[in-house]
Image: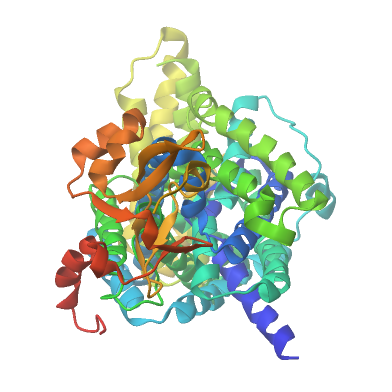
Length: 408
Length: 107
Length: 115
């Protein structure tokens, strides 16, 4: 009974924690531009993150190596360092986008000036990380992020064409703008598979001292949690498909996203949506800052962990603080957070193979994994998604250029 | 200005108008909060303003000139309507009037 | 005491853990000794930024940009190999963990930094 309760809690946290600013931006934009036609891309993305997270979690538990331990061991110092630098740059860009997203959400709630809210956001993040115990961070932000379910309620209330929705799960492109369509495919898969989520998950597995006994629970968490999180992405896309697509509206701001809950559900929908966005993106920001600190500490062999006190892992502590400050400095320059989000997702996709490949290799290494190495099922999915990730990584930048960042 | 970029700017202005109409409708029915209506109408007004400036300043070939002028005027009207909403984000009467205007401009 | 080289190559770039289980760096390079049984044996583990010089072009670049000394840990200090390379004694005795010592001073003045 207790086990079921634990699984349920873990799933709830995973659902709320799945959506971040990249998912919000790309799913709403995709719905507005292509109606239901890109729902299948979300499914591919969710499948990728489930496969990748499960492998990463298993590797972490069995070999006691987190993601960047594995990267350095497998790729060596030189290439591993390049992977670290690339990963960190992407992390920073993502973090900047998320800090901007938090400030945008706060602005829609309170109406204060944006730059003031940026400072408030980064200070609040720092305080929360410093004060709140590790388990509570995931839970609080995950659970409150569940208010994003308001978009699911709103989407249903808008009476979508369910036949059209169903056809969206079959890949087809009924559009003259193929480059833009493919750009969104890349963006949606990229938004679902953001690397920081996987680094954070694998380090968290070691932090929380999962044993091989816990692997079943955590497989369930990953599969059910991320799948249900995918439902939130569907809800965002369907809402935009119903509200924006027929009116030729091109959503440009977070306000447009909130309007998507406001129209079907009134003021209460609006407030729940903004709060959900605030906590989902806030949680993502914390995961990203930590992921940056985990990566650099693991690569160089420093002591790391949120379960350590700050004085036990001082360089790790300084690392996440520096991440927050640098992220803040990027976004305070006045760049549009929505644009930063789009770039961060595209660059994430390009950098993804650098961590995916070492994890896949380690997951198959019997010397590290013993009996828990990849079985046939894990490898079928693992290799399928390796191909998907490589194709998407190679196509990302050309598509970004040809489609003019999705503008056509 | 090419035909394509003219169309893109015109569409951007119409998008702001259509979205503004949705927002104005919510304000008219007292279904939003003041900060949200103020901030979002301001964002949409900025979008319309950018399109209007681009269309007004651009030089178009003779064949497109009348279309450019029309689109520029529409974008400017869209901006004015959205600004009005932005200045009175909880006035239901203003919102109802603005909504009707924006609905026209979004066609 | 030294160790067979293929065993040691297997530990290159692995996490170092001291006698108390604390992480204290990575195996940045290896010091090779005389040839025995047809292969060179490993005399010691090298830890620290200057040790990256032996790790390729990128290693040399990184070593040039980073500060630090190389710490030499004799092979005889290796207790066992599992998820990391476990050493027999606390980090301080080898001169490892210095980076965290220095960083500790910066962090310790914030209230709630812990013991």
